[in-house]
Image: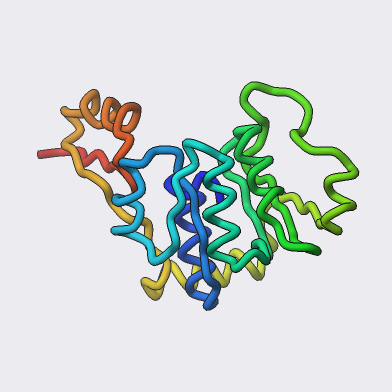
Length: 178
């Protein structure tokens, strides 16, 4: 999974683990890897060099590749990495929205047919799925890690941490009042 340190990535990791799945997650920042390891039980791969990251992921899967790859990064290079580490017959879910910068997808129809890959989108949740997630939130099994808390008066510092904190994983909360 790319974009693992973001809110959607963290929630997806937790959901996968609740259902007993092994997770290999990526982050672009080496300094964020330790922070990510502290809040999730997953293999963490740094993707500063995507070729090296692909080798590491292949090694972790004993050369088989991953069954499912979810991309939350909106990066052309990381979406390509997600495809490159799929096993034969794997499933790719580009869930990040529009790529940055916008442009064509970083793979061809031949890439998909060669891998016999399925590409699936994410439109939202069915009502039953939303109720299941609500139950996991209610019983405490699905939680979002909190990276920092700030009084509302320090909103500027909280925003700066959010923008520049490459080692921050989790929510940054603002508390109104005293």
